[in-house]
Image: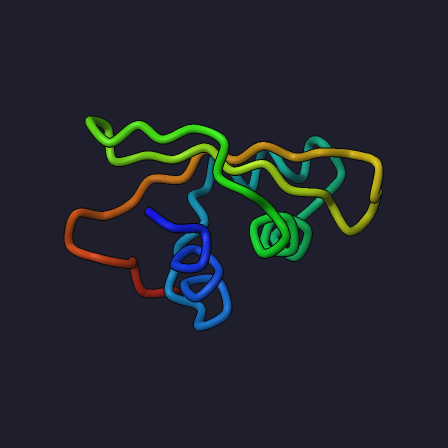
Length: 83
């Protein structure tokens, strides 16, 4: 998976943020807007093809000094449509 594919998925809103990710974000003081910004600015640092996952690291908008790490699941059927 290429980071440009992830960025395209984010820009075209073909993703789904799972409930546990939203709950964790709110507990840490950030939301979906910051998650998406970090993904758009981030880089892939690990890939797990056997699990259909990648690890992306990006900077958060609310704190430019804070790096955020996200584990993304990639559907074998292609990008997931947004809600």
